[in-house]
Length: 275
Image (cartoon, rainbow, N blue to C red; front, side, top):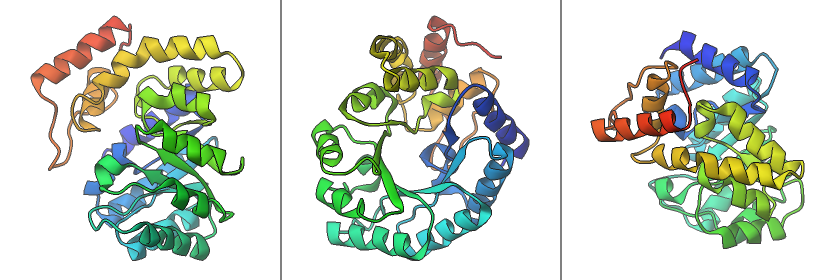
């Protein structure tokens, strides 16, 4: 782990206007970190943020016991909230998903965000399950990385304002805001934090046209960063911009030459250069 660069990037994000950071999510290569590394990344992020923004630590697992351990550590380390990905590979039923999240919410008193990403986990958290889970005081929202806007509407329609819906895909942030979502846990903000922040804040403050313009201006970048499996394209972009190395842990690999050239082309077209 490159602790020095990690700290530098956190401070840069804060200085450029983001509202929070989410260490050890998918983009943070959580799947290939040891538990010791995972916990260390959370601790570094909390220390580097210095209380200036919220830290939402990724603490999910396909083992409820492991998720409890990671969530407990995040709470004790001083994280402001935890984000828990849907248990993957073992494909629990909706009843199993409910009991998984219920157990963690009951045992650990820290605000918790469900991370629903069926393309990676093989299981959707259905609207009825999310609506039931929203009744727990410390389950405060969901990061939705799905394409079904009808599901998102069902959840927003049937939960109160305490339960917040966040976009999990940069390309869907603008439409999800229009449905009643409140923000995004973003991949792209790692390289253009001020633009993503401006998009969200403009919408929430009533300047819909500015938000729409930003959405369409940066849509080519949103798409380019998913030409291959995240986070490989993002790390390639960050390497181009001098923000980190492009190295990535197996079984993921660096992007192809063609993908990297396309990312470089999009960055150039948008005038995004190294600081």
